Amino acid sequence: MSAATRVLVLNSGSSSVKYRLLDMADGRPLAGGLVERIGEEGSRLVHNPQRGEPREQRRSFPDHAAALKAVGEELQADGQGLDSPELAAVAHRVVHGGTRFTEPTLVTEEVLAEIRALTPLAPLHNPANITGIEVARALRPDLPQVAVFDTAFHATLPPAAATYAVDRATADRYGVRRYGFHGTSHQYVSRRTAALLGRDPAEVNVIVLHLGNGASASAVAGGVCVETSMGLTPLEGLVMGTRSGDVDPAVVFHLHRVGGLSMDAVDDLLNRRSGMVGLCGDNDMREVERRRGEGDPDARLAFEVYIHRLRKYIGAYCAVLGRVDALAFTAGVGEHSAGVRAAATAGLEGLGIAVDEALNGLPSGGPRLVSPAHSRVAVAVVPTDEEFEIARQAFALVRRTAG
Image (spheres, rainbow, N blue to C red):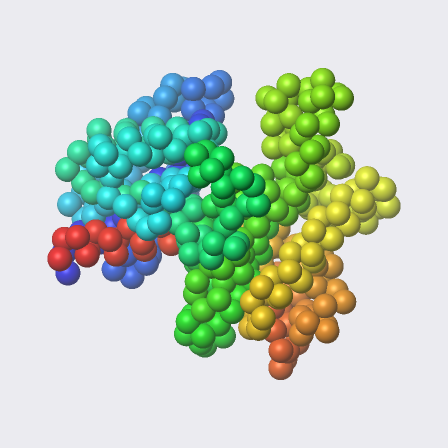
């Protein structure tokens, strides 16, 4: 094996860069951090080395180039800078790969142009992802840059699940279909859940609930995704922190024609001012649960709407899979809210799904089962690790192409 076994994972947002350096010889994280408020007042970098206390820079980062240069300096201070011969690749999270990109891909000028052409499908995300790629390529033009796509794991959806019942010519012309998102998380968690059960992923059917500020569900049959809740965009599906999830499409027409809202205003409403924040003014589930416990009617209704949608998807995915071996909760809410897990599974004993109150109430740590012994369906809490999954896929691709 080449001595180059390290992968730097970059997740570039419109005003932030989240990063992690991993040694894929053993999967060990070496460093990580976040640059936030790029191009804004109050920008800062927080760097977390493998050893020692976190380091913080509070200064102006006018653009992503300045941010990534500062990341390189922090890594250099740890003795593992961007010029290190041990660095095998830089891996980039890219939100939308359309139907073109269904696996990790080495970035070339042609690939970059195709990712750019997908911007209409992810106008808030792909441009920032592209910026991260361009800056990293400029800093290390000799190093493989690998794009790993949020949509890729869902490329296996059967046509019946991926196809919307709209005019085929129109759908084909404008790329209207179900793509799904959070794919690296769903892939990692479904595989890790099988490992928790001591079984081969090819033998296990898992429903994964990725519940963070963004939320999505997937049905994974033998390691292959066959259904997922997000669609053309990340707006469809579960109730989220600020996104509505499923609504009647005619709501858009109604708000435009009757309410006089512009299309941009409706877009903003459904993506940024709906979901939990729209229902009760808070998108932090901890605060929602606190207010609910104090009898706040808005928080109570918001929680009930959230749980109702979750239970509906769990039931639907039981039907899609036919046999369910495990239900896995992940991401911030899924990993840390015992109340959400308990409410989402309450009354599902007929489907073989239940949680043990004592096990469910234990503080979150590593992957663990929270279902009663000998349950027909294992209920698991599995912390997600999207950066590791991105690094794993990128490193495997680099090794294949080098070999």
